[in-house]
Image (cartoon, rainbow, N blue to C red; front, side):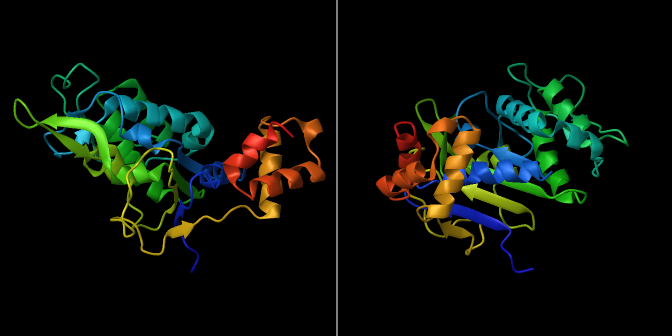
Length: 277
């Protein structure tokens, strides 16, 4: 089919990219899809313990990897218990959080008959395995055929710039580590595959200007996100109401149209105005 399977939502600051992505995630989950949602891509490149993995020469972030697995499990637990693992190579172990390498073992086996739930539990229980499991999960999700899978990455632009991590080069100088050098980002960033993947650029994350052509991204993936149409504005207001951001009794056609025209269809202004009208 000719439908695009990889999309980047771009456009002016606060035009509604993040909320559109969140609504897409909400819709896909309601439809029974398996959704790997990263609401804050910048979290993958900032904060927590990191170290250079001497085998891969990439940088591992085990604390973050554990959190990624917990978040994914929270919304997909029952579904993951039904999906069998399809890859049985041992998973490499790295340094655990603050405790160095595992003594006497450098891989962990996923026994035959394991489910994706078991795989994720392994990474949550053993911080040595967290990064390896996050990488393995990406490969496993590509092989899932029983349900549609969606990768949704907000602040996707922070995966194309430098992280806050620095590696000492000499006694007095450090080198900034780029996002693509992180094992987790390296496993999930690419859009050169057949999986459904939507990324949203966030201009509030103070990420520097990115060049038009991005590595790992098909050239036609970028969609410039327009201001909301009247119909979209109504849908968004309904979503705010469901999420209890605006009160039900204050919601009338006349009111949301007023909000729409006052904000000229700008997502973030609509949300701000909704509280007052």
